[in-house]
Image (cartoon, rainbow, N blue to C red; front, side):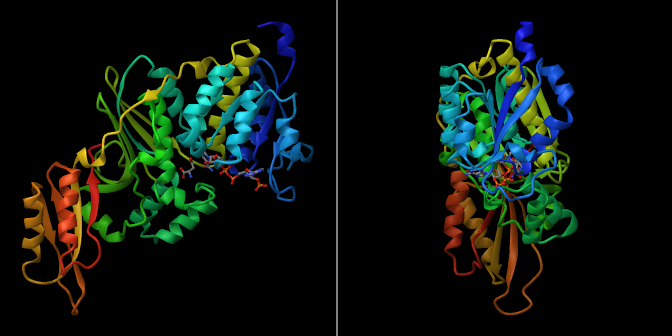
Length: 438
Ligand code: NAP
Ligand code: HSE
């Protein structure tokens, strides 16, 4: 590294100063000297793009940095690196593409943008010889991306089972441990800064699906269309499901799951019942966890804060340090060049096998149990355990029938459920929750 280069600051502009951007500014300002020693030059903030100039910001954010004019930021030749922490698809995509085209390194926390356009943005960054770093887009403060991109580059990742949405994990934990209602738990996650601007992206499972797609770029070298990943959220889970899970020695987690099946990859995002003794079962609250199975390595578990201002800022600033260092050392784009992806076939969900928890809320009539069991049998789904608890106390009241199946093909289970769903004794749609061993 030449001494002349070291004397100059690395100039950074932020797109966004909300939960994550505020944390990034705090970390940069409070640790300025230490970060300068890690980078080899000081990090200097030039511009901070926001929508609302009147809003209160973290005290470390100097008013002279703030602007609501994107041209002041993107048109500034003096900016070396751009940090995109505004979220969403547009205009974030346009701004990131412009920054890359201008030869600026980009750090982003935006999994939505990466899941939809990540492969193209990576291609653009490689072609332009700049870095596109995105550690904070997956698992908040946990180094999932670095682990997959660097530490496991010498191995094949066979599978990933991950708790990837802090809001879902927080809500499920509050519901299970404190009996909190779904809406109240979501409101608390919003207040704590865990949820997306639109929390239906969290509880609907889409945020975790976006993270799974980003992880798959590195774990399985896959270009995947996020719209093709089967997604279920946690909005249907209720206290009765928790009670039955408990009775079977299980707990409920929202999981993002990926398997490399050789000629295809199997990706899915949904709530799952997992044994209380499994590695992911006790990762509670806003914590995230990624349980990675490497062919040579075997199991590897990463756990940590999956959302929130400072944990996420830790990942963003770590990326900034890397990108700034490679820039001043004259090797920009090195980490991004290591990412190799190709189109990979997605295994249809109907082909996936699992054990299933099935819940049928039914009229308390004779023959109902036999009809349900018969439909499952006709479709080759074998029953491991069955529970029918209680009885209706007034006419028309539903009672639940619970069935745990042996390992079955999802397509067969779905066909059986379709048959049962049409029966006159059904009170609501049958419920299916997969049982995983992770
Ligand atoms: P946020 O609190 O809503 O902050 C967004 C910031 O971007 C705000 O400062 C907003 O300006 C600004 N902004 C949005 N659209 C803009 C536009 N069109 N022009 C100018 N400024 C605009 O969001 P966040 O929670 O920090 O999340 C930021 C990104 O990090 C998202 O991609 C999110 O998915 C990701 N992420 C978040 C977390 C977390 O725990 N929150 C964790 C990991 C990753 P105003 O302040 O003026 O409204
Ligand atoms: N809304 C996200 C979550 C933020 O709850 O996990 C972290 O990506």
